[in-house]
Length: 458
Image (cartoon, rainbow, N blue to C red; front, side, top):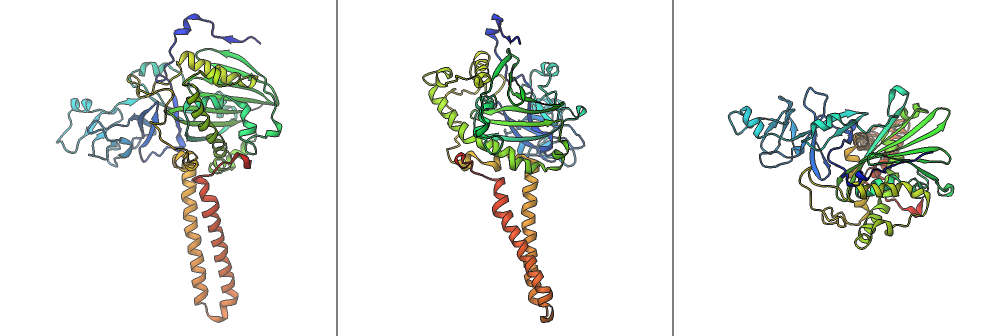
């Protein structure tokens, strides 16, 4: 099979523009249309909101022009349906124009433009909200196709589920990790792999250009892995008899030392199980444990790489002798060649001065495992399914405690003639409810907050 590589000498001068790209910042099902949502992309803060009586999400820079307060702390006004700043009540319409200043008698059209908020292009597709972070290149955004997977297509009988989580390591590390299938049997043993079944992974590079890297692996299933910079990294599995599956991951650069993964898992077989299994259960049993298994390893690896690259490059810091590392090598070469080894954090025109080997002063996270594996803030709060499940579990605990109290109180006031026939079942019912409450409180509820992943125990 012929390999397509980048042989054009003029491409040596290509500078990949991270700002003029489409990024899927969140699944639509995880957004709340009733309140603004804060996001960070490329070190720039944005706010997602939906006008009242509209089904379209909009994205503005998270900055009120009045006194620079965050609009993500604002609200959707009940009467106008516009975005209101909670600091002084200024309001902004769908175009970002200022329409109301409570401290002024009226806002003229000229003032509305002068005191506007910067809006950026958005699209909703494949169940995701896509953002183009550069507000000055709307014409380019309109002609740039979204980096979609052909398998995220309900018309072809595919179903899929989604997960989103903020991660305590950099975009570079996230892309490199997802590019490496050989870590799965070991880092995710017992969850998504089996170390006893690990084997060599022959990997052939099919395409390596500034716009696309594609490799083919052979083994139990033929797998095509595609990296479409800067964020789409997709595994397509051919299982036989027309059965196909895909893991479509989008690696989102949030800030130095921080990233977000938005992943879609699609298949065209056993579709009923995906519809039956609650999304929050899938996240708890599979998706979050996989990400937990990577987190401690990758944060430590990233720190070591940053220290090593003060005196050497990645080629000498890493030892990559096997075919399984081919995609990691291609990605690293791409990032070095077209991204010059650094992301332009800050804004499309004014970059944040970040030393490539020092993220600690920007994101002081510490090395405590509950902070690194903070499932509550990294996932539960931004996942509608898990947030709703946690709320219901807490409510159920209150109901069960109330049932226990009523059962005990009711038994105490029963006449002696009924205390045996009615009282004992009521007490047993109350004790059963109390036992279920105990399990919810001390076994299930903590899984929404923090689960320590000890590799030696897997």
